[in-house]
Image (cartoon, rainbow, N blue to C red):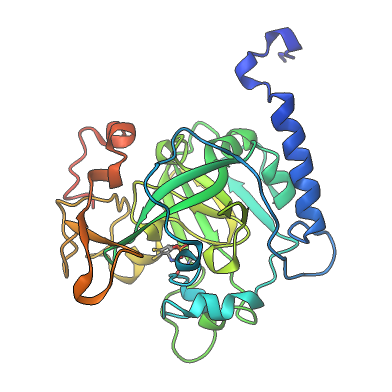
Length: 316
Ligand code: MTE
């Protein structure tokens, strides 16, 4: 067995002391705010989450926090855009744990605190393009999913990563009652290379604070070059698999939503065009300004190589 002594560890793998201290302070702050808790289920209050801005951030004008937290898709709380903001405060998000299983060397149920230890937090300002034709620019706070995956040791047979959201009907009104809009749990998946891509993050905050419940507290995925529905909220399970996992919107309507779901202005949704989008906050009704949708949501330079040789029309 190879034991690496400090001089063998490349400097790129050593967390600078400045960031290490910040992470320790941050975990203490989150504990104080009830975001990380060991006791009975609690409703966390928003806690400040300072993080340095990553160079992969866009400098486009950011959507207001008010818009980003009141116009949401989170069907566990209802199908209307204002349902998540109305009902998600009932969700208790502390303590929180994530089961990581499947083709990994260290399968376990990890606490949120364990998950946060995988990398320092950064601010990433990303465009989010919803398949419905609107978009936002959101300053997320999170860390690369790759860091967490590396820490649990993906095995050589792992080819995909599957994600699952919480099922808790007593706190999620969209999961109980006669009308169930989706099958639960909400599930999503990525190819392993997509999951390991440096743009793919797990977010725990936005706008300098911990995530509001309606945006997927306490832990959600953000994959900026894919339609928003891939960015699964309130994650409780991550599984590495050798087979392409099922995904919620593909289960609901396979002819409308594929596994890849890369933003692509050249491939229309069967019921509407994907060529342009409405940036939330830029006018409404007849005054709505539309802007052209960019290939891979503007991240083509970084991600197009993942799909060389793949027919993006057949693999929508
Ligand atoms: N995750 C879960 N668990 N349930 C959902 O209904 N909606 C998706 C995605 N993640 C959804 C989800 C869709 S359709 C979009 S567009 C984004 O969350 C919206 O994220 P936001 O509300 O933070 O803007």
